[in-house]
Image 1 (cartoon, helix red, strand yellow):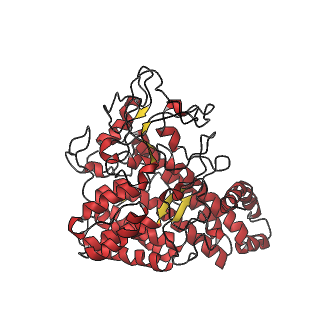
Image 2 (cartoon, one colour):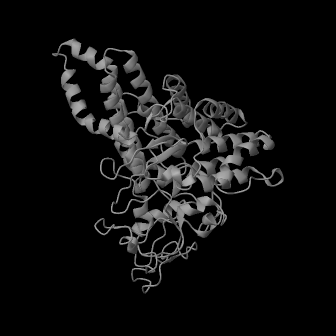
Image 3 (cartoon, rainbow, N blue to C red):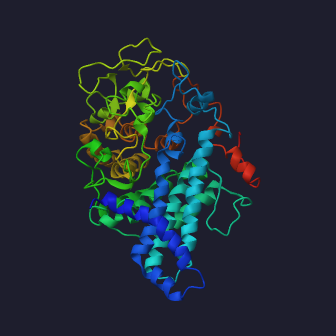
Amino acid sequence: MKKKNLLIIAALLVGVGFYSCKKALNPTVASVTKDAAGNSTRYLQSIVLGTYTQLQGLTANNAMLLTSEETTDALSVPGRIGGDWADGGIWQQLWLHTYTASHGNISGAWDNAYNTIGSINVTLSLIQGLPQTSATAYSIAELKVLRAYFYYLLVTNYGNVPLLTSTAQDATTVTTSKASDVFNFVVSELKTNGALLSASNPNVDASQYGRLNRWGAYFLLAKLYMNQNVITGSTGNAGFLAASAYCDSIIQKGGYQLQGNFLDNFSSTNNSGNTENIFVIPYDHIYAPGLQLQMMTFHYNQAGKYNWGSTGGPWNGFCANADYFGKFAATDTRRAGWQFGIQYAADGVTPLTTRGSDSSLVLNFRPQVSSLYTATEYDGVRQQKWQLVPGYQSQDADFALFRFSDVLLMKAEILTRTGDIATALTYTAPVRQRAGQPNFTAAAFALDTILNERAREFAWEGWRREDLLRFGHFGDKKQFKAVDADTHTQLFPIPTEALQKNPHLTQNAGY
């Protein structure tokens, strides 16, 4: 049985298991039922893995990963001729940094994160109510690390957020915590609980597939410390040095290595034998649907080529412009993750055409985006690095949240920031070699060199916003957008709906 199926089956069982558990844990039932539950690794695993299914919402077009990307230079959603993707300007506001507290995507990202945290807190309360055993201790540690990931997303995007850690708290009265306090909370949670998790990666222990293990916790700690100065307002290299130690642990002890082929990390079978992906969201077009990036980016008339006639898509929206696509050399193998140029039907010979608003022209994806509000149907290159399975709106490729290549590039960045460029280049070398590119030379190497390499390596994977913030380029000028007038958009606003539900929250400055 494939590792993916193991997780999906556990998730499917969670509904029955959770309901049965609530019945079994009724105080009128003999306490031996509780004892059995607290000692049952299989039972505990089923309800913990059921909580992981909340992750599948993270790649929706109004959830955290893509909403954050849409504020950067990596992902543009121009309105198209004919009015598609106009939607009151919400997509263009993200690109222009003119979003407000009532923006639906920003509210959606917040809701997705807090709904997941609420689900985790309920499951934690359930397990904490059992007799405490080594099995329950492990499950509690794993859930706290998963919750820490969502607080990481919140603190890096919203800054000052409420900390909800117990079902006993009243979500309508809890106050906003300072970003520095959230940072310290997440660090403490990861340090305390990460060390309790398995040190085996999924290639050694199939039960760890799709779950956070010790190395996933250490990856998150490295990320937190990399962004410490941005999150807390601190200065200096203390955070980077702390991140370095966690990168070293993963590199030396985690057992991960780069896949030989970059696109293997995004294949429909990337759940099997992958040595690079540290933590993934498992997807399956039947049992775990939700990965639909190709629907958001491909042209309408590509439906026939991929047998998507009954799906109502693709929707011809998300793209990258010439400036971002220009970061990829023609010989860079990662460029194969994009669709550009003339697009053909399934026979590979017949050119596809536009839908009609552009007079049925040949569908020739060009990097240039002519307008942020009335772009042609063929403006912008399209993302295709997640392997496509024809016939289904949702795809089978797992979405890698944490990859080993990121650890190598974090280490290279740390060494560059601390003045050791020669050693930094030893960490960029394997990433560059896999991409078919020569390594950088010391004479032409700088921090922005790493930023550009990260743009090529992690396109649309949810890291670009925090990378631009850390490197000081989030507010830069880009196509259709001037330099930001101030820095308030470096944090998303606390959504209007959240403030209406809880007036004790404090809005971020500038909104």
